[in-house]
View 1 (cartoon, rainbow, N blue to C red):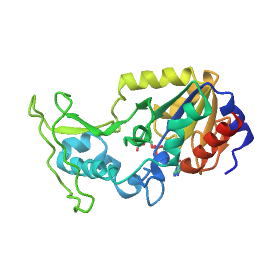
View 2 (spheres, helix red, strand yellow; view 1 turned 90 degrees about the vertical axis):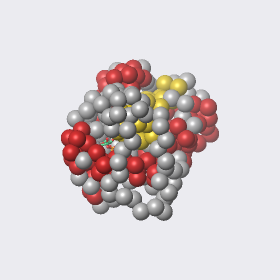
View 3 (cartoon, protein in one colour; view 1 turned 120 degrees about the horizontal axis):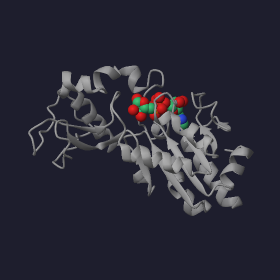
View 4 (tube, rainbow, N blue to C red; view 1 turned 180 degrees about the vertical axis):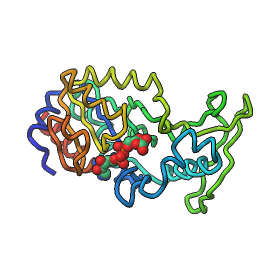
Length: 257
Ligand code: APR
């Protein structure tokens, strides 16, 4: 795939790069996005029944079962060429730093080898007590891919206080982890290039990062096959998918230095 000239120019002159990613980054790995018609999780499930503190209060076994099956499906997917391109960018194309700020709760950036990943919305692979916040280190056996996914599953119990253990993700109406947010703002404010990949730009405060980056003087580039709420903030938009565009960009940078 040909890299648009202005995108290549901006990437070539960038020393500090920040890649802000959303669900579209993992779509080509087989992880469903949230809002894509039909295939998106929120097209198939009601977010208010699964991804809110109220839903957890109402029916923790229903919520736990759903996140547990998503946790299980992580084992069946692999990082795609986009994740790998981001992980090798600094070394292959000589950028000073390539930081990843993701809304994704999967671990595909880390599994691809990205050394610096900020998770704004938590992680499917971490768990904590919903009462005393103690991190849960107990066993959470990955369900076999072939196993029928139970609609309800009792969450584990906290060893400290006996409270129910919840998934380590950020639900609607909850605050982002402060350290993650502060780190995200810091890297975006000092970036030369902010590449926004595979996010609809609908969920704040994450959707505000491209604006913060642009305000601090960074060039903002959007990689997304469709128009989004971030498209107007971007200096350049590249209507392409993550696993096709990002390897093409890093290879072009490696070729032309
Ligand atoms: N490559 C690049 N972008 C893609 C691809 C792909 N292969 N496939 C889809 N996209 C784009 C879609 O066009 C859409 O703009 O990815 C975006 C996915 O948008 P959402 O499903 O809204 O996901 P995201 O923006 O990450 O959602 C933000 O909302 O539900 C909450 O907490 C959840 O972190 C999530 C947040």
